[in-house]
Image (tube, rainbow, N blue to C red):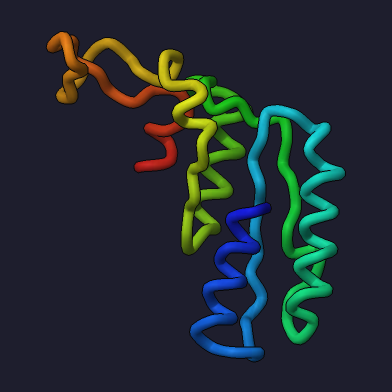
Length: 126
């Protein structure tokens, strides 16, 4: 939700008061974030009343970035990315780095071990 506000603020700085509506689907593991996402969405509508609606920022949960395909999380992620113009992946990637690093592929870590991105991310980049 905070990424949507950052995008709205950037658009506002560039285009002035005629900001277009930003739709943001927040994917998270915990449904408990719904109250926070709703509060941010409501404040975005107050700050940008000419186009933004609270219903345009919403939560889809649970989505576990560490799940591999086939899984409901991978399906939800793939569908959200397919509808998106911009995809923002926040700090949660660093938070889950060990689980998301699969020991094979073309990338190497400091000790020379080959790594590739796992979890739902292969579905994101297809």
